[in-house]
Length: 333
Image 1 (cartoon, rainbow, N blue to C red):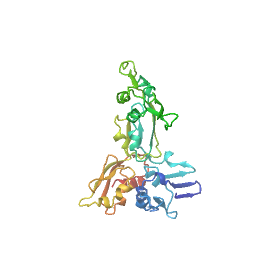
Image 2: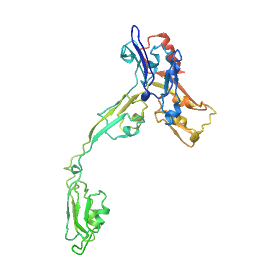
Image 3: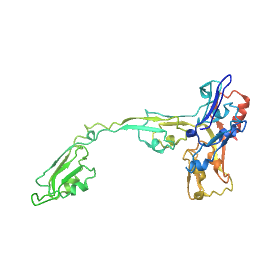
Image 4: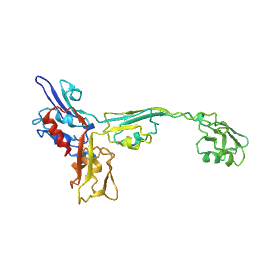
């Protein structure tokens, strides 16, 4: 974890946090002293190498904090006397955000499953099965021959036959057939398949359907802002529009004209993309702009320089310095 600290009238510290870094190189592009460089992005993304995605040159860094302010993913932490620059009024503020409305959420779990950063955690409580179905079961142990047809056919795995090895003192292959009513759905398959008519099932769910309350689902869903990169997977996949994302950049991503993608033989862009926005379709890279955050990591690793990023606007405010504003404007090109 690269870290620089210098003491004087104030103690300034710059720290790179690899776990939050996308390898986009925005910090490298904006640094006025060329003190930053990207590491071997592709080998690290593919798990071939262990290392930092960004390196800091201690001899060149002037600890101005511009790189930390420019990183929308909070991978660079700049502090003055222990206070994070992101909490200081004099430094720029990113206005991107992610939130999930729990009042609207139905706890389907699609966002949690799709999130490429494992940033969404969901807990849900479903109603007890006894609240949904009701009925009665009975097995006539005297009639049962322990053939096992009911046990093998039960779709709910609710039947268990206690079997034994027969001997001359007890010429039987079983001792009892039991139905677990906590699993039973009263479908009557066991009754219909039993060759001895030894099972009786009565389903009362339909008879009392008007009296059975609608299933109630409860839970909670939490978004880890430390991991979230505002990729919009949760927003796009949510069936009830409970997730709302504001991205750090607006703009477009596109392939250069006459670019011939190497597809399955390369897929460097897909390997380095932290948003899972790139896939291989018909031996060619396909980029879904809905999930892209315009970080530029894919463009940086493409061996043919075939991917271009055009940022039209930065969701950034409170840039007070003209010099800094000029540096930030360079990210729009």
